[in-house]
Length: 345
Ligand code: SF4
Image 1 (cartoon, rainbow, N blue to C red):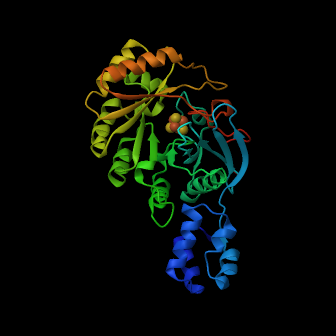
Image 2 (image 1 turned 180 degrees about the vertical axis):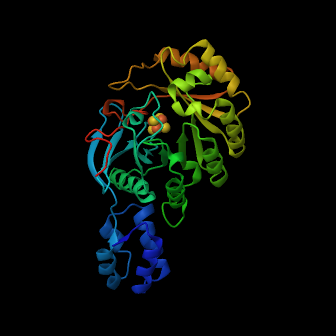
Image 3 (image 1 turned 90 degrees about the horizontal axis):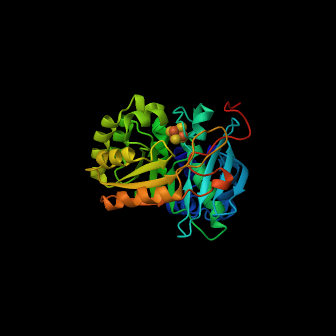
């Protein structure tokens, strides 16, 4: 079988069936961009080519095994099984603005072990392939199409640290941006990282138009080390130099999860203000979503509001974010395999 993501294999199939390039373009657009049903996609081909394509193309890489729909905010968590029986999760976000977004995973588990993150508690099993990353987008696109929606933004903020899976990340970004495939503008894509300097540089140089979200969470080195083990290796000073460079390509998104008594005090505010004073950044203040087995608690909404307003007064573009999908464990930091351990078969 030829994978639908295998461009060389598809080209061979095209030649074998003497399908005109423009018909192949229609086929690809129908499949990737328009997310049509497989029978509708095949209908874009000449009659005599359809059975060869039908019998020889593998169109589904992941199997969707669960779906949880939030009762409070329209988020849906999709649980997918890989062929070696690992579980990964994606989240469809349907905010009131009507701009549907998809949060996707890049790894099974994560090696970074951030203290506040449920995925980090799983440990690391393996990287996802580019096909497994893209199939999350495709299957979610088909699902929301049935609701009359399209996925407007794709964010790499699900399970895993995308910059520790660079080859697959870059391959997936190339396909997502390719006009002949998913055709996303770079500004509709975002990659989130807890901060791996050399990979951030590589990413920013290769994809200047794709947005970079940096999970800062504290501008105090000792506090950040407690939250993010990788902070011992990559210090705030090193990361600041990289952020300054990345900011040449546009505003950097700064993610700041507010945790009661950990990073929401006066010292934390002043350190953040000082750290970002010359970096064009958009700060997102995020609520912390508690989960079983975690002893941290989120900062109150009132306190988050004050913190965000003070940042605005200090001249920073700041948004107070409300995590969607908290009731289905689909909010930031809550994604985790529920059904089996972290080992794949
Ligand atoms: S926050 Fe991101 S990098 Fe840290 S453990 Fe969770 S998934 Fe990994």
